[in-house]
View 1: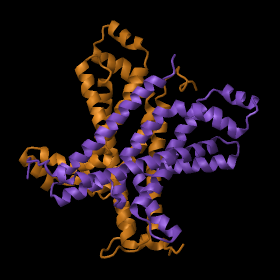
View 2 (view 1 turned 135 degrees about the horizontal axis):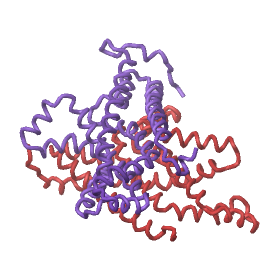
View 3 (view 1 turned 60 degrees about the vertical axis):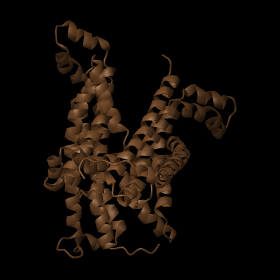
Length: 221
Length: 245
């Protein structure tokens, strides 16, 4: 079959590939929103004056960051059912894993963001009589978040690419759908190329957006 | 939590073979190190080359290097593995493709190494480019004004400082290579993750298996980190904030 590509099978398998892409997108969005929320809490914990809390958060982040994602995916797939006592589907397991894993990375971004806010802002907030949580919610986090929007998006591009690793536990994402369709139509090569093109187009457009945002939000010097 | 612990599992023999599970894991460790280190050599060589090409005055070369970086950065590593393994042999001339598919010894290893090497090279290139662009513009001008050619200026003036400046970000890339090598399981390289999945299925002692494998990955990342820390201390640039002491 050397060299004779046949991309006509793509049209027939598009609905099937679309269900795969939907899961990929769902996983990306859930892990992004959950990861940013949890990551912000972790960042606050790492910066808190309570040594125990700060230590625990930094252990969590460092451990997550030093294990390959594939191993983390396998770990959760194995351990969650042992803890809850009932089997969990690959898809749900992936949603939990990615949220908890990405939180470690978003945490470091949010921490840098919080630390990038001028010291006077914190003092000014307290001087106005804000409590810690008011100060964080109304003064610091909005600025930290705004400063970090391009970096958060870049991390989300990485996350989008990493979702393909759910292959390890057989969750049906875009790549898995392409593989199955490739087997069904006996056209694995075309399907892999097609999946690669979709990933490339999405990531390339997103990184273009990031570049524009960076120019817009860049600190004018 | 009903889990039957068995820490002696590593010394037990695998089902239907005369090796122990420990042998499996050590083989996996060997392949992980082999893939990662060979890929790192490729990544450094090509990464430095394409990184510096992104800063040269020629528009064509900059475009080429940019295309290289964008191509390898915007496709997931796992998909790239499949591309190299299933697609590239189809694109080669017929008899080469056949040779790759049927006769190339340890083809999983070579495919994974090339794939991981090129993937990482795009990341290294970005760091090297940032390093060169962080230099004062006067360095390039001074080099040229001294009568050095452009390649000489890069070789003797720009790269020696730029490369020393980017050692810290390269440290994380070096650690990432070990982590990313785990993706090679998908095309059948018998590295750590592959062995972990195999041992978990075979022995049904998942937690012990994954703990051991995770520990081995830690050792890789930690060693990589220490090696780079030594290099970083040795290559600090005197007169900078980092090199003051």
